[in-house]
Amino acid sequence: MSTITENRIGPSDLSDEQLENLFRVVEGGGVPVLIGKDGESIELPKALNDLFVSVVEAMRQKQAVFLMHEDEAFTTQAAANFLGVSRQYFVRLLEDGKVPFHHVGTHRRVFFKDLVTFQRERSKERRVKLDQMTEEVVAAGLDDVIVDLTRPD
Image 1 (tube, one colour):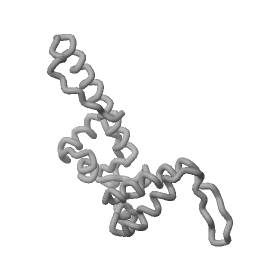
Image 2 (spheres, helix red, strand yellow; image 1 turned 120 degrees about the vertical axis):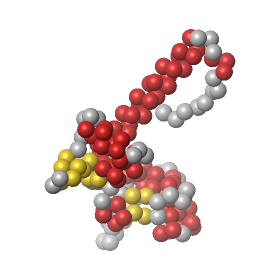
Image 3 (spheres, one colour; image 1 turned 90 degrees about the horizontal axis):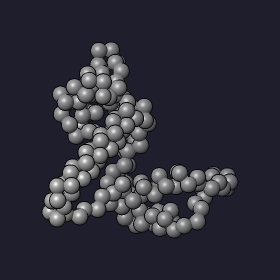
């Protein structure tokens, strides 16, 4: 996973003034333009601009940002850390076929894209179960004790 440290940019790499100027420009509307060494200009595609806005927003909140290919291979320990679970539990997920993996020699490796897919599916399953539990509480007439929480979709 050496790419992670090589492709890291932290909030201390830019001054607050630089971050605010960048944010003002990319968030200011209109179409951002890249200008090359020879003066040639090209419009920045919306998808790249949106990504850039996300990076700048994260850095303004004092968060580091990593650029990683989706086929970056994680060790089982790194994958477990990413998901916030123990290595033993993660290995059981691999053995149960819930997360795809491949071998490098005798070591298991997991692609970043597969971790993200698993994470999204797990979040969806949790949301469905919570919604079912909420429906059961309402059906039981206990909905007056439910706190109204807004959740991001």
